[in-house]
Length: 194
Image (cartoon, rainbow, N blue to C red):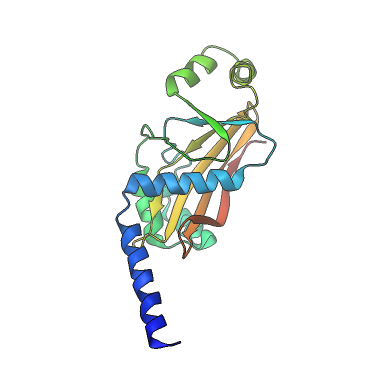
């Protein structure tokens, strides 16, 4: 490679790294959520509903060091990404959900979820949900995103709840593409309704 071209490539790489490094955590997190949701769209759904609360660590993944190590190994994700994910998901938080999705979406508040499902059988609550959010295949609950030290790997937990006996929770590993943007690398199902 001619020296001038090599210098140009190196300069562009450094410039893109510097630009990426200036993004806030919230901007990076929203970019990861956007990429994983857009990747998972099935083409049949008319709209999407997303919880305004983070999932935290509902499966207690961080509580068992052996299970955490196995998960890191299965996902082939840097341990620092899991450590960051664990720290950021020690509690449930309200999420800032201004996403650029390939589908129309609505945010459902914890209060609205409680109203729909309080004091009724689960099937009745789900019927009320589907009446209110026609065309939505249930709702998503997202964790905060954990990043590795180099900010090139992202780890996120996502739940899809879709009925009294319908739903799943998955841990997903995304990688930052050289030109920017996130792509799916691997995933592990943490739980699935039967």
